[in-house]
Length: 148
Image 1: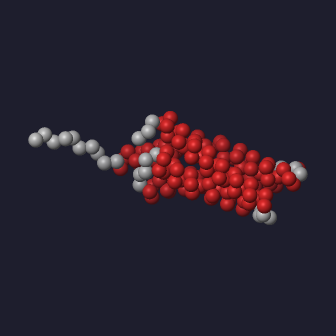
Image 2 (image 1 turned 180 degrees about the vertical axis):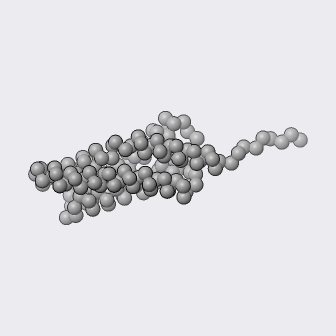
Image 3 (image 1 turned 60 degrees about the vertical axis):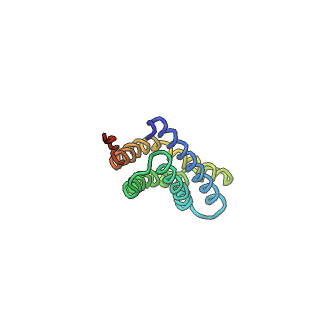
């Protein structure tokens, strides 16, 4: 297994790609349709979560038991996603009415980013502990060479 700094770097890249996907989707859905911030941020969250899980599972950490990793990922990600959705919904109600309409999608994407940032290291810590521990636990033991 890669050292922690490599896993953190891979998790950071995976999170950056997933955040980029989410931001593009959020900007497009909120800016080009008539849906509210809750719906737009939910769609954006889901659009980024699927590729993020795949990158985390197959690149940042060695694949372990799918069920355990998926359960952990969904739990941690849903908690972070609910926070992001709640904050973008609050931004829509409190801040966006103060801005010209052309700046509202940009302000909403910034609020989504601000909500995602604080949970980044906490997510890494949980994933590293669970994904790495479960991978080590289920890795077959090396057998010593038998003497003939």
